[in-house]
Amino acid sequence: MFRFLLKTADKVGMVAEVTNVLKELNIDILSMEVEPHIIFLKLPELEAGKKKELFEALSSFGDIHQILTVDLLPSEVKNQQFELILQNIEHGIITIGRIGNIKYWNKNAAKLFSMRRRSLPDLNFFDIFKDEFIKSSIESGKRIKNYETFFELNGKKKKVYISCGALRDEKDRIVGTLIILSKPEDVIRQAYEIRKPYTFTFEDFVATSKSVRDTLNKAMELSESDEDVLIIGEKGTGKELLAKAIHNESYRSQYPFVTINCASLSNYFLEFELFGYEGLFLKSSEEGSKIGLLELANGGTLFINEISHLSPMLQEKLFRAKENGKFIRPGGGEEIELNIRIIASCSPAYRDLIGDAVYGKFRGATLFIPPLRDRLEEIEILSEYVIEKLEKIYKRGIVGLEKDAISTLSRYRWPGNLKELQWVLESAYYRTTGKKIKKEDIDLNRFKKFFTTQISDNYGDEIVTLKEVVEKAERELLEKAMERYKSTRKMGKALGVSHTTIAYKLKQYGLMGKK
Image 1 (cartoon, rainbow, N blue to C red):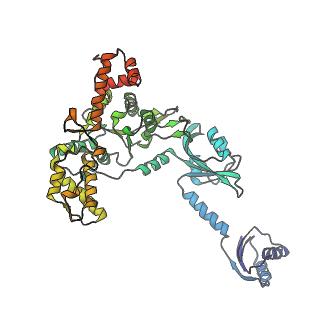
Image 2 (tube, rainbow, N blue to C red):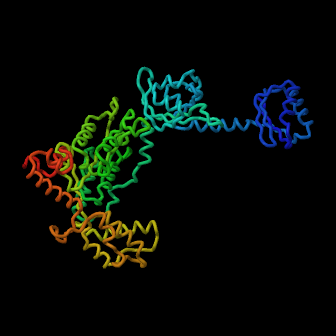
Image 3 (tube, rainbow, N blue to C red):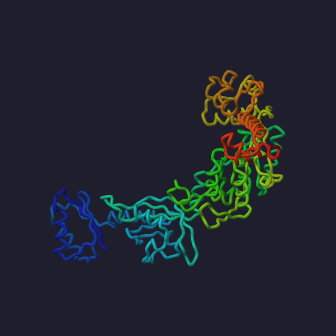
């Protein structure tokens, strides 16, 4: 091929004049591109004499200022760049026409189908993926993101995730579809990268009390095993940080650490978060399937924060899947292999809500983090650590705390534990005007509402958590209802809840069978 460009004057009819010259010399035009003041041409390879004749004919035009040979036309440069990008994308890329005929695929798409890329087969996309949801979405121009589907290869079903979007012309008419194919492990890896926790190890803990040191030593021993672990501690004691440290010191550290907070969702949605679903199982779903956190955690650790908020049925279902090494998504039919470690947490007040069978799974692998009020001797070293971390970031020249500030912090009960201590110190750090934080900089009441309520009468001046107050009132109400009504159905009707909720609450407070 012979490629060259002409630099021309800004004159109407230049393209026509150039094509007339080529016509008179009986030279075919393979490709032509026009930009302001420039005409690019691709011609068949010419003999030296023919090429000289052509250049002399074009040079005779006063409106053609310069003739230069080029390696590629602009469109060819763009195509090569685009091809280079597509071939280096880790996903399979396919483009199809309006009726599903495959027009292009990259090497990763060819690899997925075990075919050679250069021998592009005369295939129809809809013959490979016999999925009505995909077909209707593509035909209507609807976007799809990570939709799970299957295709057959050598008699075996293979799972793949499809994302696609319509290709449109200048009149917004659909002329084809760009399709991205992802392997399940790629989708899971990408999801994990988004949720990936920062690294936290046992060296990051600041602890001097014997109770905490004993807990950390036991946790270090457990990190070398693959036992499931239960961490018991009040809100703000650092249960998730301890779970991360165990994971990061274990052989699973190169695999995901995935968390779920059971206290923030109802059990109905917790099941879908954990196990995912298939086949437009939820009416609100537009993608047809969802990868659950169990799959995201495969190979690594699933941290279940506040496992006591899982219903007994879900607790048992979760551990049954873990022990069997496989499960089936709601709405699905195919078994998914599972290899995870479970680290769970709960507050001491809700320990009894963990089913006996599930609690037994943790055997001797139970850790207790004492509340901050039981280790006030650590207040000073913890406070200095927090201020040091803040100073590394904000550099305000704060070098620590005055003795009166340490005394004030040490006399407080810390219902919010380490989390509340951090919030109080951060607030004092921004408020102080000196080199050290003083007593006047500390506001112990600012965050108390997030962790406690002040109760009088039956509770005197003692600070208790809101959960404890609710539990006490709930138990007393149930006991009164048990005296008046003979069945859980009547109790439920009187209290405005279902009889199953009544039965669950009676079991929770140890009242079942006491009537």
